[in-house]
Length: 401
Image 1 (spheres, rainbow, N blue to C red):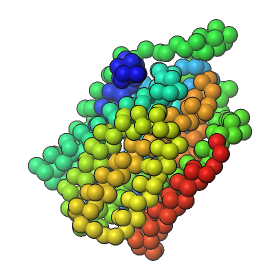
Image 2: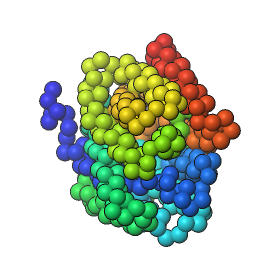
Image 3: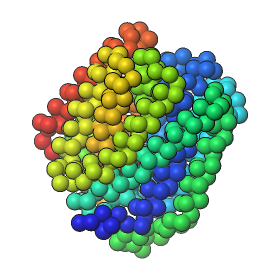
Image 4: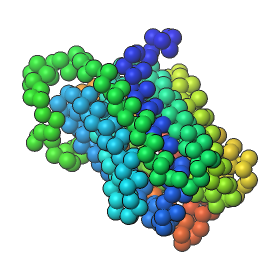
């Protein structure tokens, strides 16, 4: 099947929206560690910030995913989520007070939580089971293209104006608001299942309803299939040791790379990720979702053990190349796998439930990573993470699903 027959207009539009948003977000992400350290944040506080931000995103993904399925509405969540993320960017330039930094960062992640389940449900509905990895891979490719362009812009800006982080936060608002405007070109999807439910219980025009409590998505764990629970369990163990990428950037800095070199390897990683996301999806559709995911986990393990060796710029660049391959083999493939083993009417809930638990795990992972680094050193952190990832890959090789 040709890519033009697989990638619909809706998939294209959502992918472009994600790309514009990631340009805004990734203009800031690789410089965030340096910015936070420059205003007095310790490694432990950085870990807590990233963990709390991701936990906020995760819990809101669960609630808003369930809410989207309950009302069978997707577009309002997509538009609101991208809007919050866009407006959070310039807020970082207002003040360096820790509470304000925490608020701005969590507002950005809240936007992600609101939109993710609904957006992924739209993508899932636009694909067949045998093409789903390619659809999600294509979305990740354009999304990550934004993650490549954003740091390039940041690198060019900081080369001319070193240390001017606040102005960069203001610039990030431009692609963010462009993403919001692009969502206005999307239309509310109408699948056959949605038409059936809408006919039985018409939408009353309310986005927030009393019938869906904040933690109501937790019931889905009991209602889901055994296959969903087995896959999710393995993924959550991995999430418990998969700390924020900021620690890889801090390690690159610790090894001896300059600020510009750190941004440079991060740009390189995103370029590799964007380049391989669709091919990895095509591989998964043909070779198998499980096999491709296992390959990615083994690569992740090798990267983290490799980062403990304190090599030079070329060594770190090679590891970030592998890290891009790992991301291409896991991010879109994970969502494709989960949606394939879930019912269509529960797609947003299935994604939201998994990402909710994942982000709670990420809170502990990032906080624990900061503590391990502080108390036992960077080598212990990266070797421990690599070993656990290796065992998770082995779990997926032997578990019956």
